Figure 1: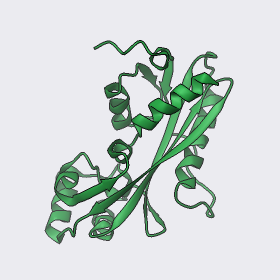
Figure 2 (figure 1 turned 90 degrees about the vertical axis):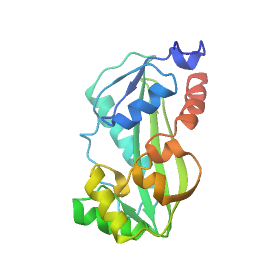
Figure 3 (figure 1 turned 135 degrees about the vertical axis):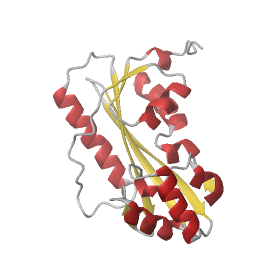
Length: 201
């Protein structure tokens, strides 16, 4: 299917991420783009940052690293993003292995957590940051359910040790407030709106 003839779809886009989930979401939304890995940027951040401030900082860090490394045309827009799981004032990053996965899922069980995705749009002329927030409620997960998911899906590359599009999302998540796609890894509806604003400047 050809993309609609809106100006936002004519933009030369670069998704500076190695995430297959983000690339698939962009494709589903009708965008044409190239990919380039910018995830080799330093991902440390100041300790005083909280919640949404963290992925916004990291998305901009990735963007700055990319723009220093590559030369882009004036019309090209580079997209970088970072997603975190935020539970009771603490970040849940990618698990170190099976035991860490089980620990994280046990902490999410029966609780509400927030998923923040910071996105940076950058061209040779301008830069724009925005953040999406989704609230996710897990049911009480049994030890057997947690172990099964860890062993069947190996979610070791996912923030918070789970993928909402996988088995655990189907059986374990009671409700979501906010964008589902944000929890997957990219708030594509908000990105669509923000790209319109970006090219209008």
